[in-house]
Image (cartoon, rainbow, N blue to C red; front, side, top):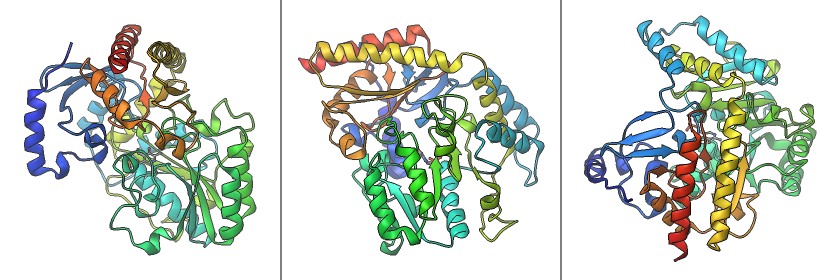
Length: 438
Ligand code: PLP
């Protein structure tokens, strides 16, 4: 079976004339997988996409993470419809915002106070401003390959999108700004210690994806987060967790409340940035943390942050509805079981055809790297076979399985994926890997 996409190709030609690069986010282009027209989707329902040529795909892209209940989930659709009927934007507070804030606080106890924004980028950007305001210091330490959105400070040694495109630093960011950022390898506690010894007095915050989602799915090594928090506090800096991907992805909560980490107190951050899932598929971001730190934010404190669209009733309603679905018993366990089935089969097929494949699975999400070594940091993720991935990606796409067009991105399962989807995906992967081995 090979899918034809003449209409996508035609639309891409048109898009190129009007939209820069034909896409509204660089990671949507197929540049990293050999170029050509990306697939133009027309609709999506449950775990499936339908493109403009009428082809069906099983979706593991899941919009780069926000889609966890499948597309057009009836409970979320009803909440959005109700919000639209009630008016989409007031510029005043609403009761809904309190409800979602309560739900986030209950699930992530390190957040005494919350503020809603419109994207993960905004959430992260503001945590940095707040940390700087609170500590009265300037520098930030981040980890190579972790992506924290596209604001100036964190677009240095960022993850999947920029690294895929080979842009270590974006043009347009003054050297003076980049010099405020120190980058350390993920999972390298000695590297962090050295950076803190050298610059500690100037460091406002250490920013990390506590479970990485941007150079594959990568767990911190045992003790890494505990030591990170201890050393950072010792230096008088704040710990910021970017949980834009990891929030509500692996369980009902975030990395900091995840069962894999036994000592929750030892890994508690000062500030947390959220996005993606908490908006149920509509634009959202949120940040929160300890009361004394959050009180730096206007109107209480001197750190200014605002937003015309922030906390809009449609996004908030979708977020509440999404979290309600995720509270249903067994939803994470089901995603977990399907991901085990899929990754076991992928590994068996890869072994059968002698293709080295390193799979990092964290519950219902995983990354599959074409390499013969483990992937625990960005260097190891870079040292994987992009051409092999591109081939695999296209062979899967042509059989109706949609992955992210980058070797760094994860596969996400949703509550809507079924055993039949998994079986079809396993068959497609078996064919793809067999073809690659020939
Ligand atoms: N932080 C992380 C960990 C992300 O993965 C992303 C986006 O992929 C962001 C922040 C930025 O979020 P947004 O694209 O909503 O601005």
